[in-house]
Length: 86
Image (tube, rainbow, N blue to C red; front, side):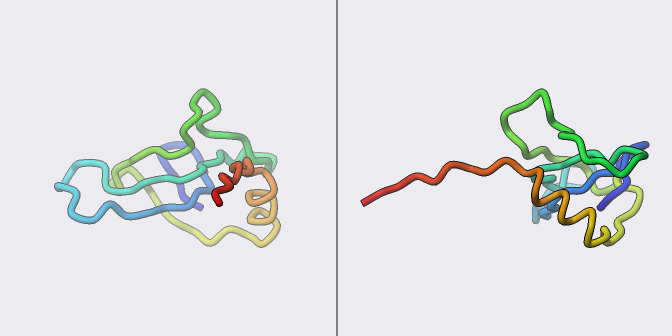
């Protein structure tokens, strides 16, 4: 869970190694906004791709989410179709 500007987000965060200073150096995967009521809403509702890059310097803090919030996060994520190959 992270604070980005004035929003709390729950996302998987991946580091972009070797990113130049000041450039985006984190990938947010499946970011969900946490509402004041504790609900999760799709942060990238306008996009099909559910990954975006941000600068770590824009992230104000990281905290561990509650088990309840994590359960909501994983139940709200879209299920990716499997590609069957033989």
